[in-house]
Amino acid sequence: MDGAARIDEGSLARLVDAFYARVRADPELGPIFHDAVQDWPEHLEKLTAFWSSVMLASGRYKGRPVAVHQKHEQRIAPPLFDRWLRLWKQTTDELMNPCAAVALQAKAAQIAESLQLAMFFRLDRQPESKPVQAQACAEGSKRRG
Image (cartoon, rainbow, N blue to C red):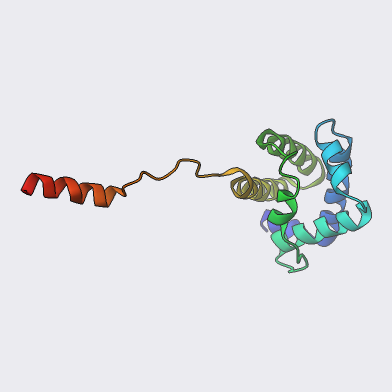
């Protein structure tokens, strides 16, 4: 049996509750979450539905995580994702069987990377005034002419 098969709704609910208790107590993550979440029981249910959808393909989560995180972009920095992942690893290692913990950690790393790309990746360089192909074409015609 693989690690994902050992994950069920009950274990995900316990994991999410324990993990977000740690997040809320964290000196760096806690204040951001406290300001962002108005109803913790509702939020924990939503997060459990998210992990259920991700790990069990339940389809229970209907939200838009990128849009939710982008609302708080001014307060979220890339190092906070590493902090979140360390807490996730610690909690999954403690509460889940080893195969399930590894599967949950790998999925969390993928999600964190995806969110960071959506939130922070910017193509800041302006394109050159002449596209490369046009410039090469112009240089080629100078040599011929």
